[in-house]
Length: 258
Image (cartoon, rainbow, N blue to C red; front, side):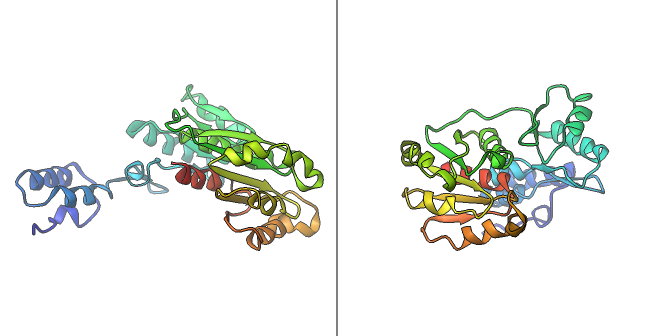
């Protein structure tokens, strides 16, 4: 069996190593399978303060998503330049309007959703008729739900969102039984005590992704109370993501949906 060449034993971070890999493949020193395995780690751009993973699209099906909080506008601009230069896929989460305005001065094509706090370039066209349903307990949960919705749409999913159907008026949820039964995956976003996920899971055979939010009075402990409620859900078929993690819920729902 052909051995892996030295070029495949480390990250392919130069033209020289890539050419050597291709030469080894052409001369049958390595197999196509081994070459593909090596390329899956290729490459990243070292900006010192950040290492841009250009081959995440190959490995994961979605390119690198930039989390903006904690980064300076100048750092994000440098990251964005590198991403656009290589693959053009733009997806920035937890971005402020000021940051969006700053980046649009150089990248006029960018779009910004203020409620979701996402900067992006385009959405993928849905390739399936399967639908992800997003339910929120209250209107205050909408920012997290919108982060999930836009994530799903950017990743090429059909999405339906229904807001403010929490347990304080459970009859509002029952009016959506057709939506619940027809959805392939359901995301439930809820703060306060977070009981909505258990109700919904008891009404469907399909997977439910529960998202606790930091919405609520003092004893909700900024999302800890709904997190624990959802993790102790009585109805089977529920998985739980982190507090306010609409992006994580949308990403996971997309994996299931596809």
